[in-house]
Amino acid sequence: MGQYIRKIMSSNNDSPSLCSLGLESGDTLLAIDYGQKRVGLATFTLKSDPYPLPYRCLLVKDNPSLISELKAIIQAENIRALVLGIPHLTDGKTTAMTTKIGQFGRQLTKIFPHLLYFEQDETLSSFEAEDRMKKSARYNFKIKRDELDALAASIILEDFLKRFPNSR
Image 1 (cartoon, rainbow, N blue to C red):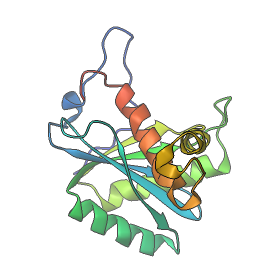
Image 2: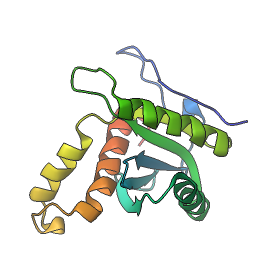
Image 3: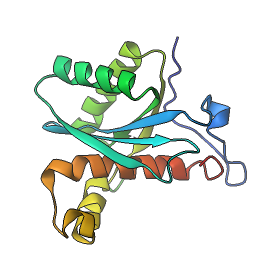
Image 4: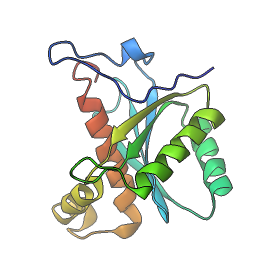
């Protein structure tokens, strides 16, 4: 049975490592920035990738199609853990989308019980992605909507990894 990990609590002096959560060198994490029209994906392979990499965006047709595409990616990329971005308002309050994405996360844990599952606050990740695009030659200093969600997913994964400073 898979491991369902919602929140990882730590004191300021005792940061957990990803190894203590069951991940090891060479394991690949997949971050998901869930949206109603597009789902952004990013990957990071422990001790291999220098930083999280935008993977791609999936167009959301319906939930079964999305799950099917995720299954194919998880298998092709040998994914070991999922990191789902959970949105909150800037004051920390939840929204209808927070609830919807939480339900999607519970669905993922049932469909992929062999994967580790984590949630990461994604507040303002899309705004950060837009800002990075405007400042990057890679994106021709423009916001590219078809790549925005994958970049937001990589920011979600960056934020997740910051919680484990000794694990990269």
